[in-house]
Image 1 (spheres, one colour):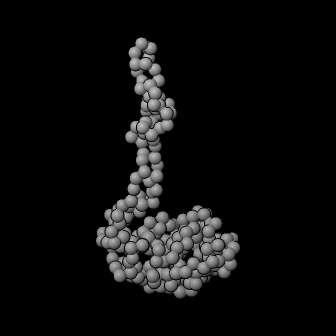
Image 2: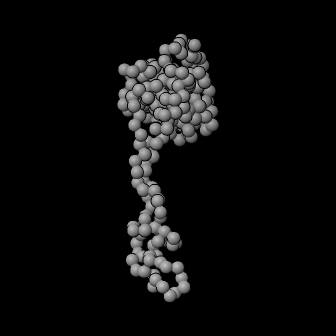
Image 3: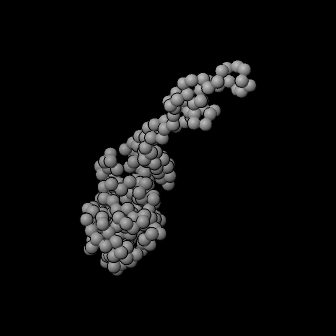
Amino acid sequence: MELSIKDLNGNETGKLEFNPEDIPVKGNGNNPLYFYIKAYLANQRSGTASTKTRGEVSGGGRKPWRQKGTGRARAGSIRSPLWRGGGVVFGPKPRDFSQKITRSLRLSAYRAALKRALEEAKVLLVKDLDASSPKTKEFAQALKKIGVEPGVDNCLVVVNQISNNLYLASRNIPDVWVLLAKDVNPYDLMWADKVVVDVEAWAVLMDRTKRKGLTDEN
């Protein structure tokens, strides 16, 4: 397999030979991807939703009317869950949604996601990927020349170092994420419609497919 290398003007400057077998994936990789993304999304949840039970709602300490003789249903508190303004039965309480992601699962999912991105031709290699100025319009035009439709495609820009110009130029473009190669995870690769990778950052992505290239943060 050959990957074309372009510059920011969209001109092809070379090719990179790549063997898909360099990324070992067991089967189609669906299982590790499913379990990783399920756990990853669960870990993003804050788990701060909270409701009050009848014992936590203010008021309601006095019986609203006597037990018998009124013709109305018996009631012991105006904060009963049956009453408007009362407590909530079995409502949400703060909880921890986090799930453990093992190193082997993380590695398997990363390999599967990167290989799938290559098979689906989502990876675009760029030489000297950076923004010459902090202007968003110029960077958006550069992405368009490479083959990305800003505002339409989910675009992941992968570099080894995020310059100030690149940060300022990219932050206001919808659905464009700029990440360091060492921080890219399987969810990022699956989310993106286009993965624009600096040539030097590509070496880091490939190195991380080996067990020694994996860290607990990825």
